[in-house]
Amino acid sequence: MSANGTDVPVLDGAAVRRAFARRAPAAHGLTRAAPQVAAACREMAERFARGGKLIVFGNGESAADASHIAVEFMHPVVVGKRALPALALGNDSATLSGIGACEGFAEVFAHPLRAFADAGDIALALTPDGRCANVRRGLAAARERGLLTVVLSGGDPADTPPADHTLAVGSADPLIVKEVQVTVYHLLWEMTHVFLDAPVEDGTCDTCADRALPMRVRQLLPDGLALAVPETDEGGPPQEISVALVDAAAGCTVLVHGGEAIAMVTTGAMDE
Amino acid sequence: MSEVPGEVRELYPFLYEGRAADRDEGVPTEEVVRSAREKTAGIAALRRDIAAADAGRIAACATAMAERFAAGGRLFAFGNGGSSTDAQSLATTFLHPPGGAAALPALSLTSDAAVVTALSNDVGFDVVFARQLAAFGRPGDIAVGLSTSGGSANVVQALEEAARRGLLTVALAGHHGGRLTQLPSLDNLFIIPSDSVHRIQEAQTTVYHVLWELIQQALRAGRGGGR
Image (cartoon, rainbow over the protein chains, first blue to last red):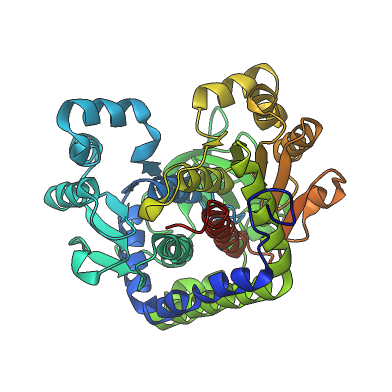
């Protein structure tokens, strides 16, 4: 019996400080990997800009991380960032257990990637050591289908599965690998938005995505509708939008979200 | 002439901040790399600060949790959004730990979509965790609530319910701790001193991993120092 009346010894702060100190080298290693993180984000942003969606998967704690990444993209904690389509494969326990029981657990990610993913999508896998068979098969299926593949790995670099972008944490401790991976995927989300908010080189219009765009009203139509062009592409073809919520006139600029003008930006040339 | 309502400006700040310059210049990758490095350095410093400020309290909390587990207690974890996935991570680390460590009974209250949606639809979102604790919780168990703001009503209610039922209560918060600082019945509160939700979550992950490591050490030592 110890002082606290049980067989459990009383721990002291020194053990905590040692545990925290063990984390420092792996976190420092991420600083060196920043260019690889940025390169992955640039390509992810290109995929999102063309309408691609993000499909995330992993096992154990990495399955929870996959859900975290999906909600991060779908419902950003930073106000003002657009929602981007993302899905974690581990959340559907019906499909997961169904495939696992019938075709084996190694197939649980590969099957939905073959059956649900589009070639323009992004597959993002998380693993503490690169050795999970279902993650490796999932990535292989995604590559075969033409998805952009990104893997967050750790442990022995020789075990990192093949992917377009491999971001490996230099630690053999799965808990430490996970902690650094949380920072990596927060950066992936943030930097993807930095690239996405920059001009799209092919001039693709993204009013169909969940983002507000300023548009110039060309002509009012009956029933609260109007023809308008994006402020950034005034020579482009006019689009039909709803102006039912605002007091719009030809020549004014409105903020359009999902085809609906939600606010006035300027009231038009005559007022300026 | 600008007539943008304040709330629209707040929701879509990127439309109003240096827009023209950004669109002309694109984003130089070097800028992104520098920003990534700043954030990496930020989380490393935050972990150092927490170790310096809270080591003794984290050790005491781990001791109290280990005592509960040694006496047959179970752990229940809960949170919203990203913190719900941390609750799942925490529960699976205890229940199915890496490296052959001892499995400890733990459950995340965020995983059952049927229960969460039923309670939200029929009663209200504020009770989704408290109601589950009322059904599962016994004196001697452990409740761990995660909230980056410290203000999530359902996390606060669940911790109050847990305290009423004699559970050991542990809360991980950020910013300045929010409403969790106003709970007199809370046994352990760890506030990550940051305003970034991302850095708070990263540091909270380390805190619950370190708690798990120390609990495993304590339980091994309690069994006679084996393994």
